[in-house]
Length: 247
Image (tube, rainbow, N blue to C red; front, side, top):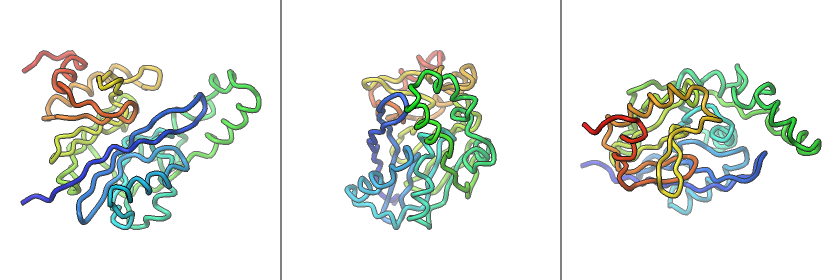
């Protein structure tokens, strides 16, 4: 008999350059282990820990932190988390590993990438942004992931390589609950799925191709890092976004 698992979409309200935003990491757990998918901005760990405890999950059983990709708002609290939950291992796709580990600068928040935004900010805000993004969080990736890998936690977590937003972007399919944790491959607006955001996506053509891969899975609910959950007519929504006729 399979273990019963919990899946909890977290709600983090973050203030950053350009205003406030809501982020949605995902917590998966059973009696023996917990997994966190994405980690919010720097300083989010205290709120994540509180959410875990409210769900009855001890940080002591956090075994894995899975990063869907390298972006600042996804990796922000990794150093804090692994400093406290030393048993937790960090997982990410091999193509985003060097950015997460700091051997290469984060693509979207490098000084060159940030220059147009910085020019628009008042001087005081500009310096705050330079200080904030100039020393990005870094963490050793303990295990690299690739398309089709399956982790044994929470009834099975299947890795779907969904490049486009970044080269190493992944989405995660939670086998037991038939839930897709989309990362930034999709966003959700008032419960409706939308495709990737062009402004923050490195390769839109590849990102659209990645959506077609999701149709191979029996998905009943989607958790988007930006916008939250969609659970109505998910298959139909994905078919429309992927521009593929129903099978």
